[in-house]
Structure formats: structure tokens, C-alpha cells
Amino acid sequence: MAEAETPAAPAAATVPVRVYRHRLPTRIWHWVNAATLLILLMSGLMIFNAHPRLYWGQYGANNDPAWLVIGSTPDSGYLQIGSLRVETTGVLGRWTNAEGVEKTWAFPGWATIPTSYNLADGRRWHLFFAWVLSIGLALYMLWTAFGGHLKRDLHVRRGEWSPRHLWHDIKQHARLRFPTGEAAARYNILQKLSYIGVIFVALPLMIATGLTMSPGFNATAPWLLDLFGGRQSARSIHFIVAWALVAFFFVHIAMVLLAGPVNEVRSMISGWFRLPPEKNK
Figure: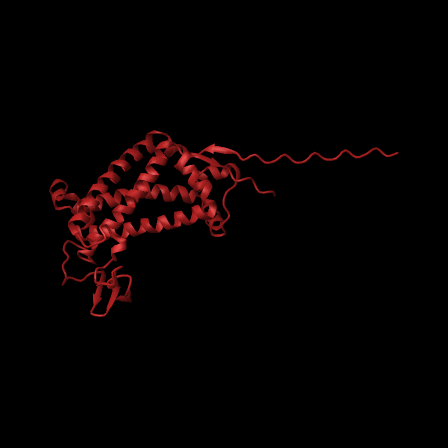
């Protein structure tokens, strides 16, 4: 009689592997910075409403040529960049508030702090949280440089600079193919470049151009005016970088949602990240 075949043992259930991905300073700075940048954006839009035109050079007034204008006519709102003009009635330039009253501010009240037009309060909010941003950024940059975060997590290694590696990473993101296993715990090249750009380029540039727009600070560091080509050029750069940060935010949120929001957000709260299982080849 043939010997009975021994049944195969059931495959062991895959136990999720957790790694400590985000240290406490990173988590604190992430959430404080997120709230700070939102308040700075909204209060900055209130300040912009006082003069919704942007210029290049030393001077800027209503009769000077502006490269960007958000304005209104008696029956419409519009955004004009150079010679390109787009009607934005209901969103920018001319819109209706919750009480049904038509307003002609550049940005609507729901997008500004405060929600009603008040330039003085907008400046108070903006300047206070500009200090929060500046102090927090300085401390985080020091910790990044001397606490090992830069060397361990953000350092771009030689092989990652190759065009083939960069192009492969871009294609993987475009196809929504995210790393699995241990690779998911490390920053990829696009993450490294974007985080380095935000921490060491965009945010310092925002602070420097903000200081350049301050008449009081011009006496302390007049060289900033020369560096940025005048107060109005600094204002334009400040505006452009602010919206570049907004674009970064939306891309960042999209990547979080696509990669698994529960795991990603949980790791930025607790520090612990659950590695996505390796795909069967």
C-alpha cells in the first residue's frame, strides 16, 4: 500500500515589519511647520490684497508696469500675467461672500487671515508666524546637519545621481509603483531632492526675501536689496516661492494618499512605519 503523502504545512502568516522611520525632531517640525506655513500663506494673501500687483525692480506703484495683476472691472474679476489675461470672476478679483455681498479683493475671505479685510491684523499674524518659521527652521537645520539626519536620510549617494537612476525613479512614480520591503523605509532620490530643496533653498529664500521687504531691516542689511534686485523683485520672488511650496504640498499629499495614508500619517505621529510586504516575483 502506498504511503500517504504528508500534507504541506500552511504558509506562515506574514507578520508586518515595523521600523522606526521618523525621529521626534522630524515629527515635531513636520506638524508645526505645516500649521505655520498654512497661516503664513493665508495671512500673506491678506497682505497681498492691499496691493494685488507684482513688479520687478526697485519700485512699484499703480502706474508702473506689473508682471502680475489680480484685479476687477465693474462686472468681472481677472488674473493677468504679462499679456495673458484670464477671467476669474467668482474666485479672484470679484467674488461673493457668505452673506451674498460682492467683494473686489484679489483673494476671497475664506482664503485669508483674517477673513475680513484688515491689513494690520494680517501683518501681525504674518510677522509672528514668520518668527516661528525662522526659529523652527534654524533649529531643524542644525539638527539635520549635526544630528545625523542629513547624512543618514538625505545624503544623495553617488549612484543616485546617475541619469538612469533618476529616470527610473521618475518612471516608477509616474506609474504609481512605490517601494516595498526595506526600500520603503528609505527616502528615494526624488524625496531627497525635494526635501533638501524645501529645507535648504525654498524656506531660507522665503525668509530672506521677507526680510528684504522690511524697510527697518534694510538699514541693517542693505545688501539684501542688491542681492534680490530691489524690494519689489523680492516681493515677486516671495510670491512665486510661496506658490511653489503650495504645489509641493499638493504633490506631497497626493503621494501620501497613493502610498497608504494610514501608514504614512501614523508614522509621522508615532515614528513607527509598517513596511509594505515585498511583492512576489
